[in-house]
Length: 267
Image 1 (cartoon, one colour):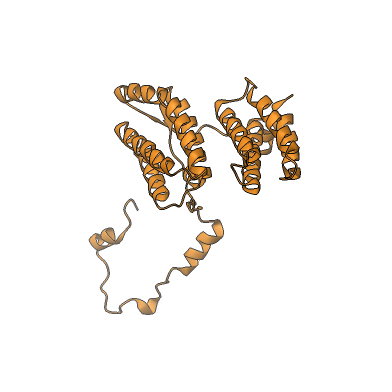
Image 2: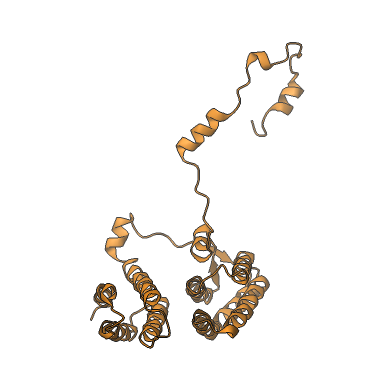
């Protein structure tokens, strides 16, 4: 079955799931396993599919709260459906055409070699990180310390690679995680984001972080929208006006030097 049809079928079953009858979840699990066997799926989507399989198993076994688990399962399916449709012709037409790639930071050759080696060694780390998040979600006490170690290592590695924006991002994640402001879902999003980043880093380039990246990864972080034309006009109207009565009557005419000093640079 086509992945798109599989996901639509799963999405239609989730609202009908009943904690007293697990047959619906069993159907979902079967369809998710079929989806995960699709060789055409991109790595990031395959990761989400495997996570959904793990989550469904936990719900069936009673290791995850039924309602909470079904809500998270719905989020996973929605994310995969969006991923499949993101590059479709219909999606491109609706958005006015495919968007260009984000700007990439070019590194010196010596750092580029280090970046490629670093990115190539991260798949196992990402898999461990995901396993720790699953344990953290279940309330395993040791999981938080394990996650903090991985985050601290990533922060240092990004610093060595002269990627301060990424190092700062991980530092902010560390702070919010330490203050119990992050959920397992935030950490899963971070893992998916870094997996995509590392895949691109294998080619020696790293996309520059945008405000939207932080918005999706950190709670309460919203990019500041640019002022609209109406806002700009309001600000212009709010500026104090200098009237003739405010100008000192005894003020002598400005000399050419004074006029130059008072003029904006480049005027």
